[in-house]
Image 1 (cartoon, rainbow, N blue to C red):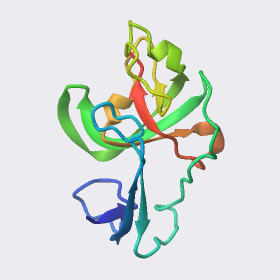
Image 2 (image 1 turned 90 degrees about the vertical axis):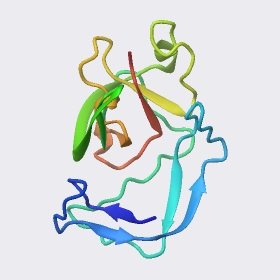
Image 3 (image 1 turned 60 degrees about the horizontal axis):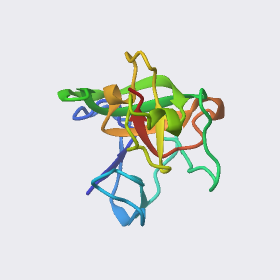
Length: 158
């Protein structure tokens, strides 16, 4: 496994990338691959990355803190262009979305109880912009904290 930081276009060398091998992988003890509950992992690197305009920190939030419904967040990542797969994206994509309450997201019109307390739901009821457009390696970052906190798994509101 090789960790790459500072990458914008996958499979294209831009000169901004930094590479490191992992020293240790720490899976969340509640992780469930069937439900994606607690889908987060800490990776301790063998050597530190150099912080610059292409590589910056996104520390985890303090325990017990969270986001509130309506708070605007940014979701970034590479992945497929549609929920059913579609064409894989090689350029980092970003979308700004409002947080949706777990109760609303778990309604029968949406995820019908499949969103756990370890997940965040974001998107618009009308669709259009959602996390699925950048699904894959994604992070949700509340805009008011200016890229200072990284939150848990993102589910698109539908």
